[in-house]
Length: 174
Image (cartoon, rainbow, N blue to C red; front, side, top):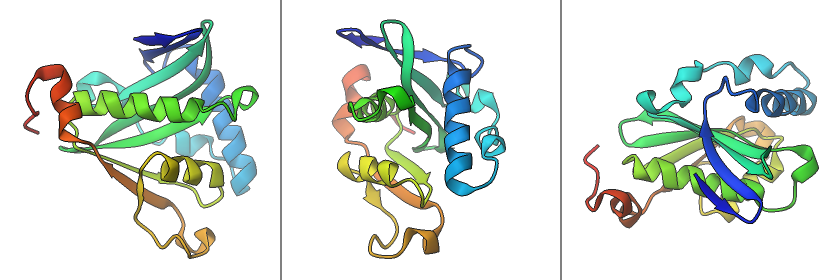
């Protein structure tokens, strides 16, 4: 757990009661943007994929104890974590909180020995696309193309080796 004035990052499970309202709001927003119920897509992966024994994590950013943002990663392959469910509560946007969550997820994934982060975002989520570009992710698609013609927009980021050695003193052998 890390903290700053009034902000705390904590790792939780999907069953934590603080997670449900944020995922509900995320599902509602995706449903509006894409014109179909997105709640099933958010439940596509078993909850345990976002827990330590399965190679994943779910982090919440709390402000004075209340969840304001969060995100997760799951094991994509032996050396790659996949970011999922990055969100900021609608009342707390435009404060850089999603960038803080992404940085914490990268730090946690790196500490677990992952060397790469992979993610996709939807074509109707320009804020997410901007976030990933601004935080150093490489687009794996033609950025000049109409996002609607591409579908999910894939990104990747290679994690620096020194970040993986910071906690253990040596590079992980995944």
